[in-house]
Length: 137
Image 1 (spheres, rainbow, N blue to C red):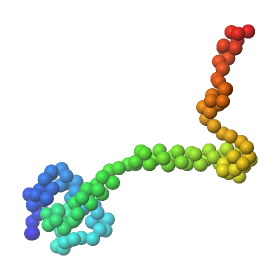
Image 2 (image 1 turned 120 degrees about the vertical axis):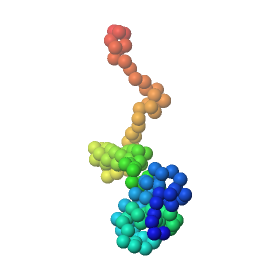
Image 3 (image 1 turned 120 degrees about the horizontal axis):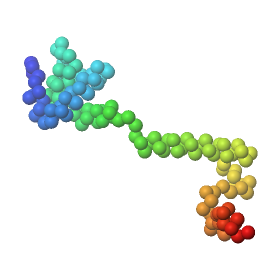
Image 4 (image 1 turned 60 degrees about the horizontal axis):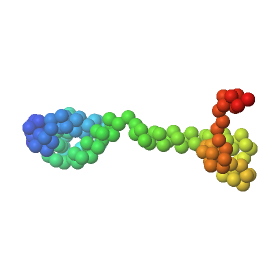
């Protein structure tokens, strides 16, 4: 193919916006050092990308995945898990240092219990409002 036009590629990727994004991503990948699937013929990277799309020598789905990865900033659920895990480890280390144990795994052996307070209500303890105590006197 001596000259590449959008019409040659639009048959492979019908949406012009998707075509431009895909060709631009492939041109960036070529710039970063990915191997070419066709001869260069003194063409610039965007032209090579369009020629590869027209000749169907590249996996368009793979390039679309790379576009998505390049636009993602972070994955919120992974970020939350990482933060909570780090916070949990730090809290366990701080707690074990405060009570003088080497690790929180030795907590049950020492006879100590740590809870959220919900289990206290099940054993008969309840929260008391100080104002109600003053009213009783």
